[in-house]
Length: 375
Image (cartoon, rainbow, N blue to C red; front, top):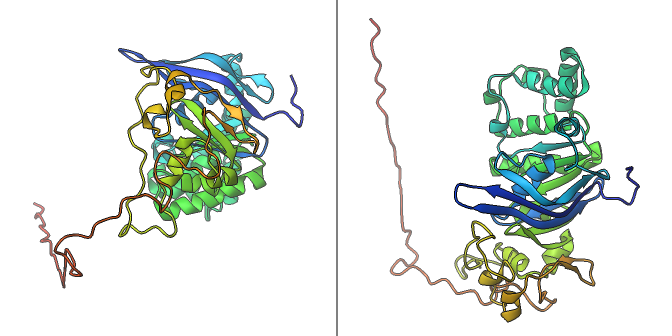
């Protein structure tokens, strides 16, 4: 079936994904519906254990040996991926859609040069010669602003910095010109300065390569400057979907508002107020929970209806989608205090006054080098 201009590039429909462990079933994705349009960047945020990575692996057809899609569908360019054979999926992965993992060093083969790994992508998927693959790899590295690309091709992964390794991984994902790029927290293992460089690069990818991006992160600050739309996941379910500006200026789900309230703000000072936190922890499996809303035990607004019935996701007047019986209105915030309001003042340290707690002056430390004589 063809795809018209109004159809989503990727459409996830009521997807349920479970993992079988030694003693129980873990439902990592529980009825998720989400779509991505061509050349759109959609961010997926939430705490660790909410099913974000599992969602990406399900789209790629990598549920693992103990994972299986129980129900729902994943449609890419108008066709169901779940109906594809393993061979058909291999022809899609790496060519039409690709995944960039969290840890670049774990994603690259330490025994092969960067050039060999880049050339292998083009050789495997397009049947190009190794010489043609190396040329394509060098051109891709140059597009990703890597200087002296020819020299980088001859190096092994451990000879590159973390930021360079991640650029190589992104280059491998882009070599065959995919329409969809899935990025699973690609800057988590990088330092703050390198993270900024990679994020600037990602912002440029859509315009230069016309690629839609599903960007997974637990860092709201990163997603706020990157995504067109944001989906908030909690315990395997979508709690809220909205445009970037809407979700940060007027969140409708208490969990979304709680996540935003956890962030420090411009007028926030640790010397006067404590950082707001969402009470409680994410459960390991939402199959262990009872009836009602997933977030009810951590939500200060929960009432009997929240404990008795699971809220269905619905569209609001501002075009946001939210799974909550009582969505927040513009005058309300989440389960914690609003930024700068209601947070407990921080008491000054006792007995310290203006004197430093630790004072180091003119410290020097020497190490004795022991050289063993060679016989």
